[in-house]
Length: 145
Image (tube, rainbow, N blue to C red):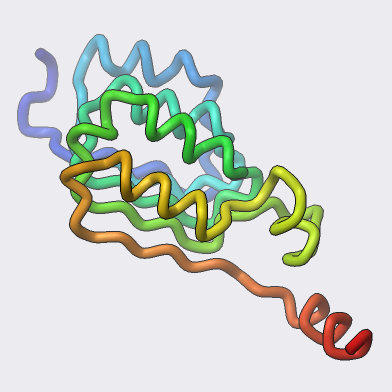
């Protein structure tokens, strides 16, 4: 296929991915084992499309504000679940809820979701998950205690 030496796909922070179908079109030219998405504009469906259209070995997601726990189910149900060896999710949670609401609602990724992901990806050997905790949420929680 095209671009045989192209091994990694990096999508920087201000990039707007047109729609999930973009990954289908891209897979017609080249599939990737490594994808890094740092676009603030990326969505669950776009990340899932990347996992579904590529046999990913390495996936890194950074600063995706709209990412919800739905992405975990999408990764688990994609072809990448069988091939994924390294996963990094850093500072990816909905920005319109605080940490307490994010945990209680069906939105932000929780530890239980990460455990399901690890159990569903048999080759996964490297996992990094980092959340951004709002100081305001912690102060509000302390004030109520």
